[in-house]
Each structure stands twice: as structure tokens, then as C-alpha cells.
Amino acid sequence: MKVDFAKKTVGGFNFEFVRGLSLQAAGAAEYGECMETMLRVKNNDFNSWVTEWAATADRVAAFADREERLGNRVGARDAFQRASNYYRMAVFYAAHTDIRHTQFWQRSRDCFHRAIALMDTPLESLNIAFEGARLPAYFASGGGGRRPTLIALGGFDSTMEELYYWIGAAARGHGWNCLMFEGPGQWGALKTNPGLTFRPDYEKPVGAVVDYLCTRSDVDPDQLAIIGYSMGGYLATRGALDQRIGACIPNSLVVDCGAAARAGMKGLLKSAGFTDAALKLIMKVNAPVRWGFQHSEWTLGVRNAHEWVQVYQPYSVKDLADRYRKPMLFLFSEDDIHDAAAPSADIIVDMLDFMLALKCDRCIHLFTRAEGASSHCQMGGLSYAQAVIFDWLNHVFCAGPAPELARSATRDLFVDLFGKYGKSLGESKAKELLNVARLL
Image 1 (tube, rainbow, N blue to C red):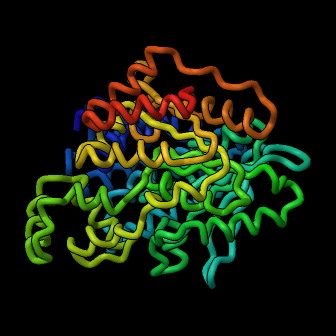
Image 2: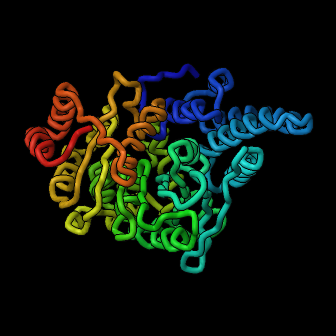
Image 3: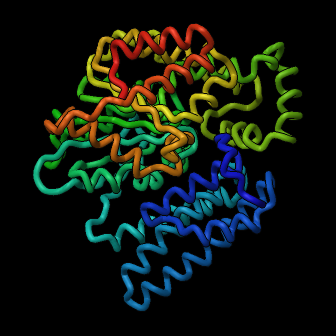
């Protein structure tokens, strides 16, 4: 298929390609390998995607094996990292009932483990106790002595191996420890604890992670922060209800998953039977929806379309704003605001209302098309996002210089975007928000 970089719908082939290619900056992808693979993929054909990305992963993994046999640690490490990413890309569209779903996920993790064993400073691979289960995690050290520590969470479909490239490796470079983990509903946690599906009260698994971190001599318990990507923006915000966490970065903000689900399928809520019949028709022509439902069967435990809409209802922080007292940095991407608002302008207004209701210190950063970081979670612009994140964290925790305030053009763009997609209320509330929050 021909890649259309302008199409950024999450769950669609174009976005998922950019997501995988984004890891090139951290050494886990090569442009040539990725483009050649996509030329073999048939558009919206899940089996074609799985087959072709697995073929590329197999070839790169075999190359890594050869390099390791030859004693080329650097070549082997780099190839194992790429193979891990390509296996992850392959498994993305495999149905959870397909044997390849477990097979390629395991190969992705195995290649990553072989890569980190060849790093100058290997990651620690952990299992954290939680309510009778074991949550998989990696710990990346920021150096000797007690260090500030960032807890990193993915979302609906990301892996903790991806988190290493999105933020963990950068954390090390900034002198921060980073603990990346998979909680209920996420890949490794579900594979090793079948049936451990998503839950709304993510402060509980995050609390178990904080308990573990507080036992380590290389972690400063007074300097803990959390970041969450995609749906992880909701999970991390819930996690930050644990008062031991000193700062929270939702990337991006998800206030009410239930409202988003209702808005996205508002025409399908007449009855359970109508919903199921309509969804089957939609899935025939809409690859992101087809993938989303299949993945939800596994991660949320839903059995039909009506359950898919209803399961998200308790996933909300809408009425919890008064419980946050620690600094928060909200990351928005220009194109992501459009995607968030697509189901309903009310979703945009809910975001603004939540940020306005907070009593804590609030900062905001808007990533733009001009910067090449406007897609979901800044895919395609990860290095820029990492710099913004650690500028803010080092200011909050390490007496670093205050990040510069955004220029007037960026402030105008922020108001225009929220006004465009949030209608008249969006514009007025965005202006009000910039009077009480800092746009960086």
C-alpha cells in the first residue's frame, strides 16, 4: 500500500506505520525496512499486515542472531531492537484468538530482552506484585545515588517496550530513573495473568508500583512523577490520586472515556441488538473500528458491541478535580484535538472544565503541525516531546530553569483549536484557562 502521512486516524494503517517508524530516532526502526514492508501490505487487509511485518521481523531477527554469533554486540543489539518493534507491529492487527497473537508478542519481548542484555547499562526486568497477580515492568536507571523517578504508562494498545523508546531511554539521558510497566488490560499483564482486564481505578495498580519503588535505595520517594500515553492519559491521571506522586503528565488528557464512547456510537444505542447489527456492518469497511472491537474483546472482556459502549462508563475523572494538589502538565497535539472532538464538542468542553476546576499548578504544551509533532502522542516528533517533558520535570523537581512561555501565535492557535472544535464554549473556556494555567 502507499502510505498517506496526512491520515492520522489511530488504529488505521497509516498512523500505525508512523507509530512504528517513529522509533527510528531511538534505534528501533529503519526507514528503508519500514517502507519496503509497507509496499507489500494490502490496504486494510489485517492478515496482509500481520504476515508482511512478521516476515520483516523474522529477517531482521535472523540478522541479529548472526551479528551476535560474530561478536558484534552493537550490530546485534540494534537489530534485536528493530526486530522487537517489527514483531510488535505484526501482532497489532492479529486477533487475540489467532495463535500468532501470542507467538509474535512473545518474539517481540524475547528480542527486546536480548537487546537490553547487550546494552552498556541493561534494563532491569521486573514483576511487581498486585492483588495476587504479577505486573511486568522495566526499570531504567538514571545513574548512581537516589534519583527522581518517572513512572510511565501506555494506553489501550501500547507495550512497555514501546515506552522505553518513547520516554525511558530519554529519561536515562536526563538523569532520571524510569519505571515502565503494564497494568490490568495491557499486553504483558494480560498474557501472564489471563483475565486481568482493564479497570477504572488505576490508582490501585499504580499504588502497587509506588510501593515497590519506595523499597529501592536508588529512588528518591519524594521525587516521583507519572506520565501516561493515549488512554494512559486517563490511567495516569487516576494513578496520580496516589498522593506520593509529585507530578502528573497526561499525554493526552482523557476526562471521561464513557462520554467519548457514547458520543462515538450515539446512533447505535437504541438497543443491544441494533448496536450489534450496525457494528458488524461498520467493521466491514472501517479498519480502525474493526481492530478496536477485536482488541476490546481481549483487553476489556466485552462480548458484544453493546457491552463495548457500556464498559467505559466508570472510566472518568470528571468529578475528581478537587483531589489533585500536585503539578500537572497537559500535552496536546494539534491534530489530536480534532480527533478528540470528532464524536462531540462536549468532549473538548469536558477537558477544559476539568483543567479549569483543578486547584493545582497547571501547565500546558501544544505540539503543532509546523513542528512535525501534531499526531497522537507526538508520533513522528518524539524527540521534541521528550525535551519538553524533561524541561518541565527538571524545573518542578530539580530546580531547573522555568520553561519559556508560549508565543502569542501559539496561544492564539490554542484558543482557535478549542474554539473550532468546542464551539463557542470552547473558545471562551480556553481563554479563561490561559488566565490560570501556563501555556509553555
